[in-house]
Length: 283
Figure 1 (cartoon, rainbow, N blue to C red):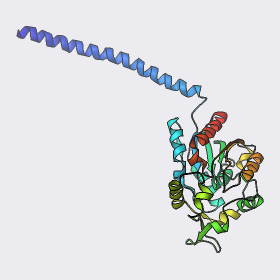
Figure 2: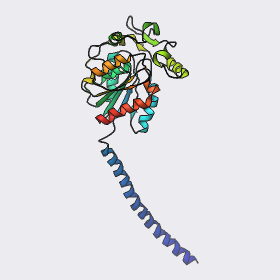
Figure 3: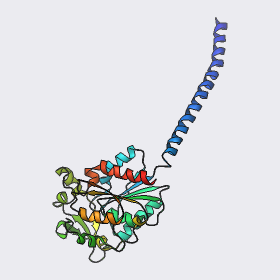
Figure 4: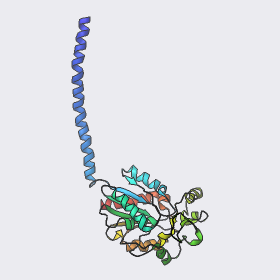
């Protein structure tokens, strides 16, 4: 019996390495096939997927992009929603430009509301930015200010009566942080959204320095970068007629949706679809 058991142990010692080698021989080709499949998928898409950068506007914050971010990430995109400092157009644009320079590869840049003015300036001369997407946004021409644009088309709810301007340390004379009053916020920014959601959005809004309204735009990036736009036809903050005029001037591909100023909150599927249109057309 001892001789038989010893012989069995010897056989097992011989068989196990053989089995291990056979399994390894199978696994390695399978991993190579999987790797090749991944590579082919990347090649078939025309190159690496672009990074998508989302710039929020005044009286919003990065969380306003949440539903859009979830959809883009589910589709395999790397997404960033850096904070907009809302301190003035030159500073905010330089802040975003520095962030863009930290990214490798192609970028699709998206701006909401005042964030549209920021991307218009931040992307100028940046060869990595392949497309601009304006969401209920300003797309100013060179020399234009936001105050001038809002005065050119009546109907904006962003008027002094609906603003609460508060001081902040180190502010230049006559400059403060402007909030939309919480009583005006639901009808101004979030009309059509559930009342409780609108109230929360009004409570956590980010203010904008009033100086941003009077600072002129530089050479706009849309002169050399293809543009897309989402226009909420129920927008009370930036009149749709003003948006359409700016978008036409920027030669943007326009999608209209029955939405308030916060269309990325009310209709994230539409906004995501337009971003992907820009992606597929330019990368």
